[in-house]
Length: 266
Image (tube, rainbow, N blue to C red):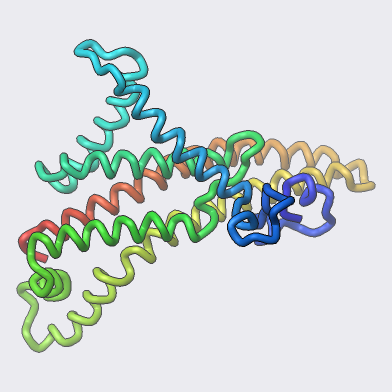
């Protein structure tokens, strides 16, 4: 039931097994790395290649009057630099703009696979990939904070609440420690994963529901199948907005965490 055609032929409703794909290298299934090379892995590698090639090609010969492809790359970079990096972090945000732009584009492409024909699933609907991105951002903003404040200074900066009464600090410090130093990568990863997982399930429900209704013996259910497929198209357009928004939110929150690490006060 892992591939879409198999799911369509199944009598069971879509479930978590719809996110499991077999190895693309069937002759080497006995090896661990080959069994991990699934459709999801392939989509991630293609997304990474597209991101890399996109910026290499568009900035190969930069011109004062940009070409269309250079303008496109500069527009994406300018969007992240001006509306996320500078707005959230301030002037120092410019040096983080390349990372934030790459993060945004990479997540966006991976999310777009969810509505792209023949792909029809976002790798971010597998929790492992959002976790890797969240941990990368977590390591970055912690490293930046430690570099600026020192290790113990950064810990104090992250957990101590200025202005709060001293007798309240024993309650606030553990809460701030868990919230600022432990839970941030978890919430980053889960937010992206949950939205992509739910979006894929909704599209499966309407698409496969239409198939089940159309194949039903009752002729009265066939018009309902058309309605279900129509809803699948509507939800695909809705999902397009969600996947762009989630890439933006992930990048925005990463910038917010960077700003909090660089701030003089908590």
